[in-house]
Image (tube, rainbow, N blue to C red; front, top):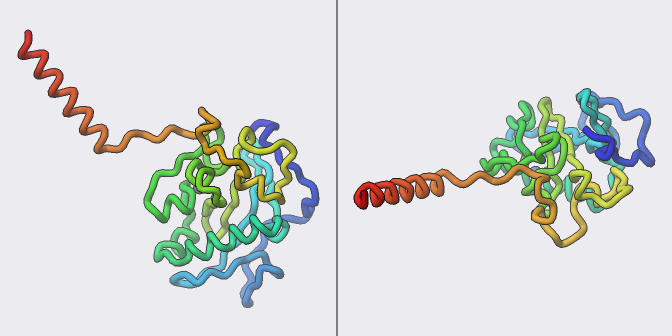
Length: 204
Ligand SMILES: [Zn+2]
């Protein structure tokens, strides 16, 4: 990841090591874990991704350090995901997809550079937090791609995760992977090509 990807670390808690699950009933205030009423019920730990580099080293913030609007959005999103039957197993095993796209059985359109480290195209356009389950009920909250962020955005700000402007991903061509044509479109094009070929054969 380039230096541009580095986020401000103002107010960063120095002691942000991985927290271990508590055997007692956890509250967010004490353990940073969020209880989700899924089947079976699970508690998840969400860590905002603050910085990562090409050596695959990551620095995370604490979810309790987020500004209230983005914190609320994350809690709401996770509560909604919990209504899916697949939530608990997805949280346990993790996935390379964005959670929202995984649960809706759709492809995730990650950024071309450093896929999986920044908000996917769908979440960017929908103005929703992009979350990825990395296994063992650990989740990461992904920041907006650097080019789409206001300069000097701090990791605690909502503007680090959700765009504040009206323009969608079309404003940033070349940032996300391009949506491939659907299978139906591909079949249609094949048929059209076959018809054209037959037509040419008859003419010749
Ligand atoms: Zn997403």
